[in-house]
Image (cartoon, rainbow, N blue to C red; front, side, top):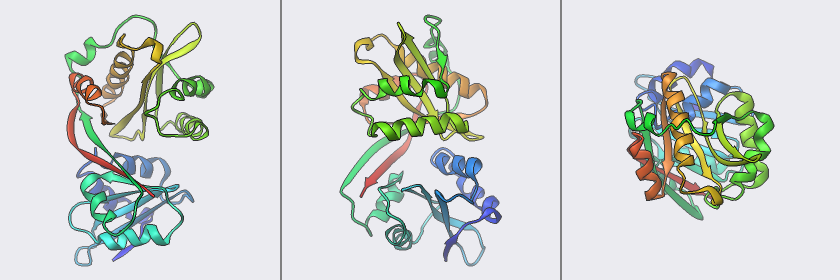
Length: 265
């Protein structure tokens, strides 16, 4: 049986999600930060009739969906929730779960990424933190300056308005942080977290201005960001599809733990 989840289901839901906290960090963060009573967010759970436990489910966050599962689940039933509900533009999550659901739906585009995790501070991570030009922590006032840089990065798939809205919301809600370096008043490198929760955070938006690359600036920012988050007792996760970026992250201590699929309607 699949039904809507409410606050009364929090403990049962977390019991399932925390079996794989890294892969489920977006859902954990959204539940911790927003609860169950938001118009932009809904949660469904597949309930085991014998035990009453939650064995799989689905999160809607605005127009994107994210599935989760601890074993076998009713893939057609989860697909039906999306096709019968509000218009959606993306299904994303652990590749094995997403691909099972996608067999019951049609998508125009798929993107696959490696999913990596960092659990502890290492010497290479600390060595990458340089005491050169000061690293700054962004506030809402720096959103436009940060986005003027990321607008120039072709790998970032987002329109300008959405990028600014998302970063502003993240900084205002405290669900992420952004570090940056600047030169002569211009932001030249940046790195951020999102989906921060009590256990983990996602590293996103690591970027360097084209004129300032090959200087290790993004690596330095990412290392400082990771060191600070790890010092708070949290782990970090990130996506990558560029092999060169993967090498850099692994030098800092990240390890691959799976693959992530993003399906676009």
